[in-house]
Every structure is written in structure tokens, then in C-alpha cells.
Length: 511
Image 1 (cartoon, rainbow, N blue to C red):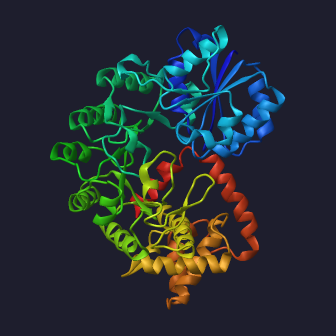
Image 2 (cartoon, rainbow, N blue to C red; image 1 turned 180 degrees about the vertical axis):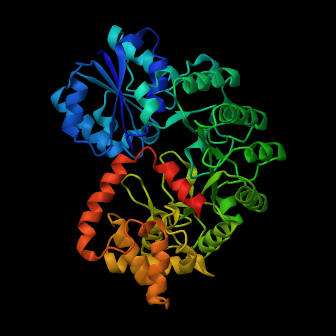
Image 3 (cartoon, rainbow, N blue to C red; image 1 turned 90 degrees about the vertical axis):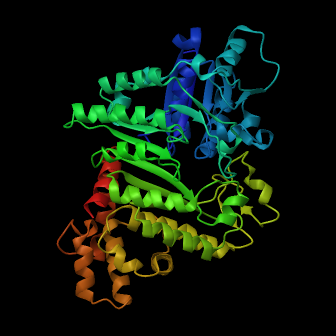
């Protein structure tokens, strides 16, 4: 194979949409190009061996914040054992601040921005001459109508075992400074009829799990309604074989026509990712985020009370101008609205984003290594930030997992953020860990915490037993079997990777 397209995905269940776009638009080079994906954590030597088996002349890597360190090692190894292979980089992580990056220095060429048109052009020059004079090429951004959609390149294996990423539009009209989409001029829609035709073909091939990567699904309501109607038609025609759709929506833009469509979706078929990020108006202004907080809150409450949509709502800790007290107020306000999951994120300095303009004035200190997490600000010191990081991890294990639905209200009570922070600090002081805590051990710890807080020991054990965490046995396992529980948990994660999302939703709905 002459050209390989490769990347390291975060999980096996992720299928790279970007690589498939490149392959779909390779033109007369498509027949000599193929995709070879890996998962982060794989051995570098194993990946290099597999890439070189087909004796490629060019390898193109998609580089992202989650894989840049491992991809750098892979490129360095390839350049040692096969220096004749031409390495071409692309992706958001290497599209900005490129000159200082080791991986760019190791590679032969770099394409910044959109690569759909420019990558095949560079490949032709490498293969047939004249060789490109410049190392760095700014990607050409063509009208979307000129791009070939990539969905036919999802294999039967992808459809069977992976989440299928799709996009009805590219770009974003908003300018939130912590997001790479702040650099977009606007949002560009695909021809909707052509796009829906591609979804129709995927569905006919057996696809049932669709995740939209559009930044603003509900920006154009007419388009949103047509896309939602596509899924509603499938649900009506095949209720025994339902589809599942995931959309990212703008929280303060939910007109009545969209609400009527949303109400028609049955449970377990629709998920919304909603970015609140902060409820503090001063912080929102500082990072150029335009949001009507009252309308956003009203819409989230409406969705919780009037729809079966599963709500995954985002908050970001560490934004310039926000202290712990302000974030806590926003967290408690959001929790009161009733979303199924609160994704507690920690600010990251994505390369190229305008957030760095606040570095000096607001004392922003970022980790120099990926994923460039905020370490401190002038309002939140390093120790407090670490507490927030641990809070986020424990919140995901206890609250977002849905496994402690009956127990969680007893933990949170009248001051949710403050009470969960106390639990978080205790868990860390007790375990010195934020991961690799076996589920049964976590259940024991939660029960112990409730007792420390004054709850009757038998009542605490009973409420924990009533949750998912205690269903493995009628009696909570003791420390003697924790090692076996860890092994079983790892095996269950591997076996159920594909269905974990729907099972997680089911736990929330059951509560």
C-alpha cells in the first residue's frame, strides 16, 4: 500500500471520521491508500511493525490532544527504523504553535487546518514530483459541496462494533475562547438531502448508533427538525430495532417546534450534550461566551421534566475570573435543574485558542504537557485545583455512573458541592487514589462515609445495597475479595464497551 492514513483513537469503539474524510477525497490515489487505526496504550513497536508491513511510501497521522505524546514516540521510532517513509502530519494539535513541537520537527510535512483537499495534493507532489518545497502547508478550505462524504467507508465491522461519527455541518459561529471553534468564522452546512441520504444508507447497512459532531446542532431549526424526523421515522417503522442519536445543542435556543419533536423520542434513543461551562455572567463575558443563563436553565429543566432525552451537561472549572465559590454556586444551580449527568471538566489550553490572552492578568498556569490542564489561577491555587480534579473523577464514579442513584441524595443533601467535596477529600485521604478503585470497594467506602456522617450503619448498608453497586451480592463484599472484584470489573469493561453508554443511561432512567 503506497499511502497509509493512521491515528491513535482514545478507544476502540471510536472510529476516526477525519481519516475517512481524507480517504474519501484522495481522488485517483484512493486505490493505493488505506486506513490503519490504533488505540492509545498500544505498544509503539507493535504499531510501527504493523504500519510498515505494507511497505508504505507515505504515512499520514491525525494528531490530537489525547494522542500527541504517543504519536510523537511512534513517529520518532518510524524515523529510526524506516527513515525513507515520508511522514505527513495533520490535525488540531499540530495546526497551531507548530514550530515548537517535537513531533513536527520529526516529520517531513505538516498540513494545518483542513486536510481534505491539501493532503492528496501534497501526496501527489511527494510521489510524482516536484517535491514540495515547504514543510508546512496551510490546508485549503473548500466549499462543503466539493467534498466527498466519507460514510460509505465505515466498514461492516465499524457499524457492528463502533459509534459512528457524522456531521451535518462544520464550524461554529460562537467565539468561546476556550474552544478551537472560536477560530471558525461561522458554521457551514452540508447539503441536507445528500447528508440524510448517507444516513439512510448507513441505517440500511445496520447502523443504529449515530453521534453528531456538529458544534451547534440546533442552530438552524429547520435542519434540526428534518434530521430529528429522520430518526423518528426510523423509530416508528422499527420500534423493535431502535436507533440512538447524540447531539450537541445550544442550551438557550430551544423553540417550541424543536420541543415538540424532542417529546416524540422514546426513552433510550436521544442524548443531548449541553455546554453550560459557567453560570457566572462576568466569566462568560471574559471568555466571549454569549449565553442567556435564565433561558438555558429553563430549557434544561423543561427537557428533564418533559422529554425522555438523556442530558449530559458540561461545566468547566478553572476559567479565568472564576473562583471555587462561584463554580460551586453554578454546580449547585445546575444540579437543581436535574440533568442526568454533569460532566465536570477542568480547563485545558488547546493550542491556538484565545484563552491564553488572559494568562498574565488572571494568573493562568497550565501543565506544559498534554492535555495542558489548568494547574492554578489567581483565584484557585494549585492545591484547590487538585481537589477539583479529584472531585471530577469521584463525581463520575459515583454520580454520573448512575450506580448510586438512591445513595447520592443522602451524600449531597442541602449543599451538594460542599458535601461532595468533603466526601471527595475523604476518599482521597483514605485511598490515595482516584482510579482503579473496584466498584465493590467504592460501595464499601461510600457506606463508611454515610456512617461517619451520622447515618445508622444498617440503614447506610441497606441504601447502598439497594443501588446497582450492591447488586452483585446481597451482602457487600469485604476487603478480602477486592482483588478479584478488580479483575471482574476490568473484564466487564472490556466485554461491555459498546453497550456501556446505553446501560449507563438506563441506570439514570431507572432512578
